[in-house]
Length: 309
Ligand code: XMP
Image (cartoon, rainbow, N blue to C red; front, side, top):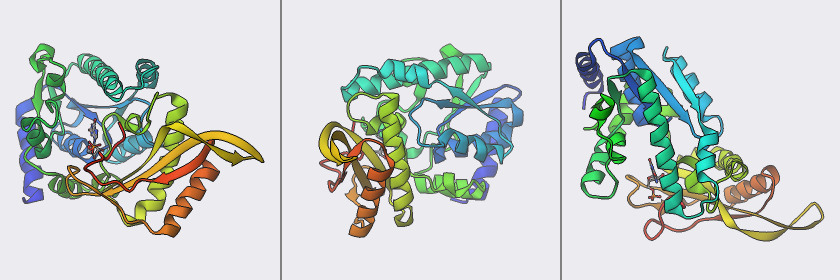
């Protein structure tokens, strides 16, 4: 693929398709939707509405990072603060599938409202070739966000454009570099749609997300130099007795997970140096309130998955 030619062709295609209308794009912070947003902006300028749904399940500073990176591109991202709604629907849920469904329903409801409010006739989506293949193979539910919830995009008066659907992830990253997106986006690790909720076993509450978010900062900082495919912190629902402040404390357990993979379909644990693991443990116990135990996950995929719910 010639990235420069790809950018020129897709920009022209989007411009032709959208004409004088408005288009909307929902940014996730990931590289796929970022590339599509910049292509859309090149093609449409102010006719493109870019929204970022802050579900309260993002990593530390993610909304600000995304808004900042796009402001540098001259793109105004509207941040929709919907954390309260997401936490309300997740309250009391502990079953992984129930949690995923609650997340999905709230996400689509929020997106549907944003689409109606925007008056857009087109929606740009960061579907990539792997999404299409996984949909066909039945691994993923239908990748098209509106069809996923059984909605005909036409019922919103919307036409979907998927400018990167022929590309695989490494090519999307190439296009991101061609578009001069910052490395923090072009080389960004995959991060799941339901965010930190996939890394909180048991009930997802603001407090529990805050714990896993603080531990995530440490894991990402410490492992950055190893450039793992994906690394994360996970909060278990079990607890363990530890010693804190001179007494016994029945505290939280954090799992550190880091994996190597090409396509996320299989994965192996990163071989992290013992001294590095000790450093991560010390920092998490010292800096994240309530944590008394830190574990490293040695399990490949399969039999594990990468995420925890
Ligand atoms: P698992 O946990 O199934 O994850 O081994 C495989 C890859 O997919 C990501 N992942 C998701 N991505 N929505 C997403 O957009 C999801 O619900 C979801 N669940 C898992 C995961 O981070 C890994 O890269």
